[in-house]
Length: 205
Image 1: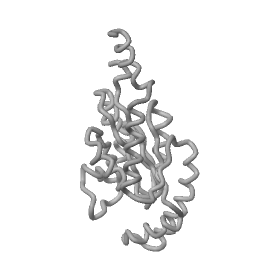
Image 2: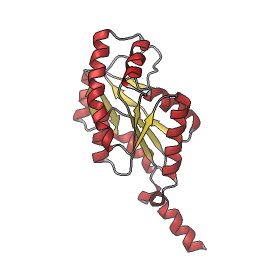
Image 3: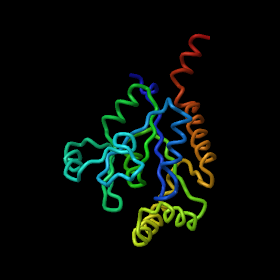
Image 4: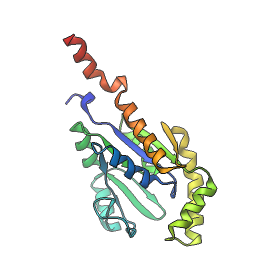
């Protein structure tokens, strides 16, 4: 298959509590033609999460077995838990010409940028660090020690901003989701992605 017919993939990352998951859900509702890459993780599911929709929840032993089999196109450890993206899902989806959204931790996103060409990388930021702290506390599922640990990790993750293609400040969910949609639509119109269609157009006219 001509590589120009491959699907577009967008990688979205953010520090914990910045609203990444909510933005991705809104984006997918607005753009149902885009597939979502469901990651594997060893952490426990939250009350609102659904197996096979939000994540594939597996044991550490199962995850390590998949790592040994090179089943992940990227994987990383975050807060003591492992997260990984299926190489089979990514390659098969893109080869069919379908677009794909990936919700990936910054460490995993960096690995993806090195290993797969043509991706679009978007980093979500909260309006302020104070707002990030308030969001983490409102979740009500973590201790103050957990929150402090996440804030310290967020400080490190914020240093990754410099190599992402786009930045979205999540001050308001609907606006942030619309900005992600705008990025997607703009990238779909990029000349280099339409080279095959342009060539065909010039040949027929």
